[in-house]
Image: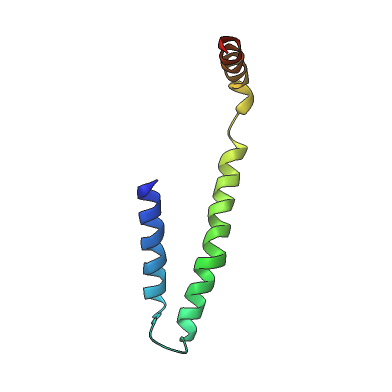
Length: 78
C-alpha cells in the first residue's frame, strides 16, 4: 500500500514537472494544463482499461467451490 501511494505521488509530481507546472505562477503554461489533463483523465482511463482486460481473464468460477466451502466452515464454527 505504501509503495503504491509513493509511486502514485511520484508519478503525479513527475508528470507535472514534465509539463513545467509552477505552484507560484498565477497562470500556468499550456504544457502544464495538458499535463494536468493527462494525469486526471488519460492515466486513469488507461489504468481502468488494463484492469478490465485483466479481470476478463480471471476465472472466478474455478475458485467458487473453495470459497463457498470456506464460508460454510466459518459459519458452522460460529
